[in-house]
Length: 175
Image 1 (cartoon, one colour):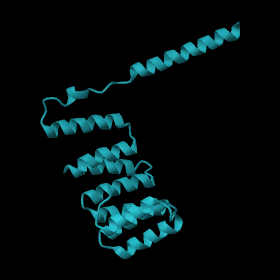
Image 2: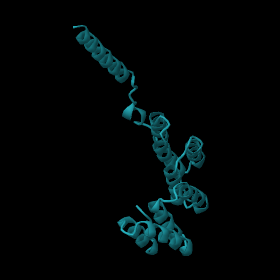
Image 3: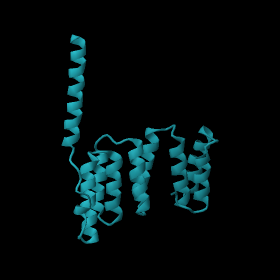
Image 4: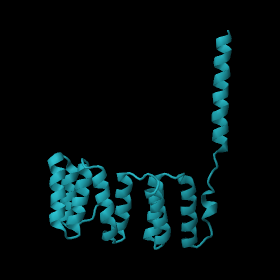
């Protein structure tokens, strides 16, 4: 009987804790944050709310930074990228930030991040194929083919290695 009471009490405490945690979660303002504002003002408000909701997540902060960076507010975007890179960034984070620089036409800023990501994950054949294709697209075919060769050596059955190569040779940017 005593065990049953303990189990019931534990379940009640767990349920109460979950309920309190759920109730404490702050809801976002939704459209009230954006309605009636000029487009730029609404966009900035949305991104600030997104940053609050991101809770420091690297994927989220990079996407928010991308929006700022590509819309012309490079300083704010770069500050978010720096925040990610200074807080234990991983190779995937470096790839995502490098892709933003590529979108912005800033290949010189993208290259060191691509290379850092590849150095951190030397067996990442998908990364090798991506960077190899990028080199081909920017006119550095020899470097590109060297990386594609590494990717194909590691995994010659990966369809996406061939897609990336095909896109690169045909001058098509990846989706």
